[in-house]
Length: 100
Image 1 (spheres, rainbow, N blue to C red):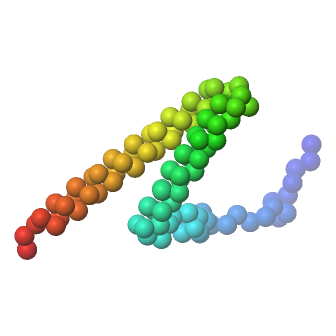
Image 2 (cartoon, helix red, strand yellow; image 1 turned 90 degrees about the vertical axis):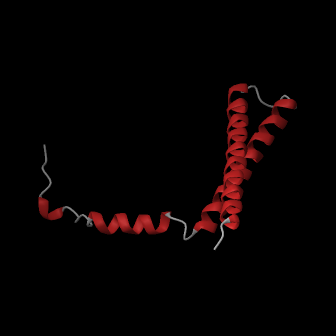
Image 3 (cartoon, rainbow, N blue to C red; image 1 turned 180 degrees about the vertical axis):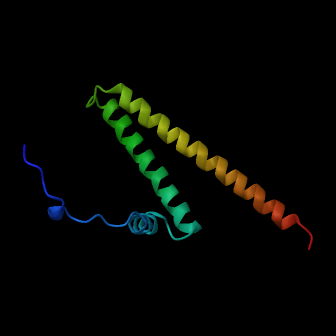
């Protein structure tokens, strides 16, 4: 058995530096970016569900399980978007009704 000497091992970068680099790149820059990303995710989910339904209707797929999962994901995404929209509009109306 050969043991690798410690002098030949590459150095490990500091943990704090790698965490800050990934956190900066992973987070959207603002609220509008978060909303745009969420809406894009909803649209993609709906497209996948529609493609699966189309393929199932044409008989091109036998995997009903995946079709139903994608359909439920799209349904949940639309319901969540409608709920968030309702809450945001309700909060906006409440803020606008406040007297200054």
